[in-house]
Amino acid sequence: MDGWDFETYTCEKEFWASVTPASPYSLSKIETPALVIMAEDDPISLPANVRALAEQMPNARQYSVADGGHFLFGHADEVKAEISQFLHSHVIDPQKAIDLRL
Image (cartoon, rainbow, N blue to C red; front, top):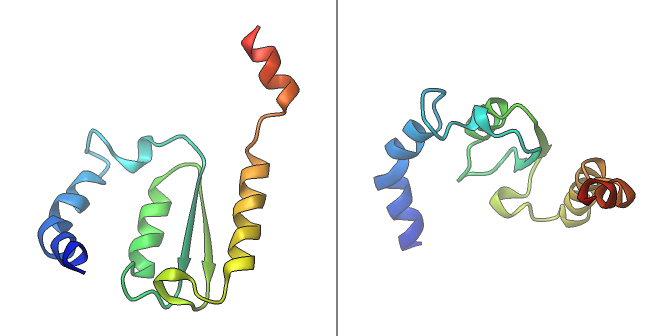
């Protein structure tokens, strides 16, 4: 809890400054596919903020569940299936990976 309080009240301005398009580390420069998972009722990672972050990454896919809070309680199987589908949709065919090494 101390870490959460520290981050919430001392790092928030720095965090938001670091994810602007002008930042040298802006999210818009992340080309790697990213899966952003959230619950609509999350009291910590507010849905509007999560959506705004995901929208900045050009290859992000956002997946939302209606409830479950920050830990997505009650959605383990659903979330695991989504992660599996996401990973399978971005994996390189092993044969092509071998060809790339040659």
